[in-house]
Length: 84
Image 1: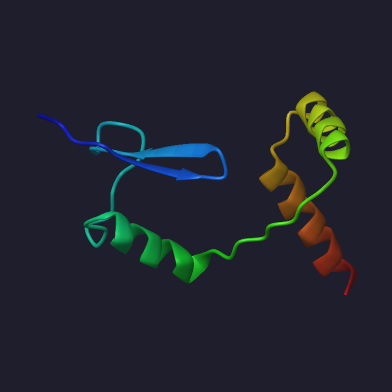
Image 2 (image 1 turned 120 degrees about the horizontal axis):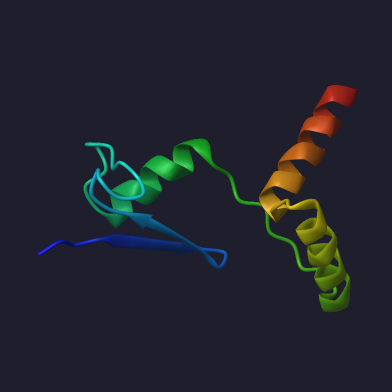
């Protein structure tokens, strides 16, 4: 019997499964808490609330550009860092 670990974050679902499947699981990651402990070493969350209509319009623009919100934000952060 095969067991998958499913991790959800911001409506995004990542499947951590056997090596054959979507993602290779590093040996140091043994369970969900270890996974998140390792993830927090290299990641930092950025959460804001925006008017619903404004966000829906923005999501349509991103869909036309075929970008995710993360890709867009990474690009804007890089642009800001280049200016300094």
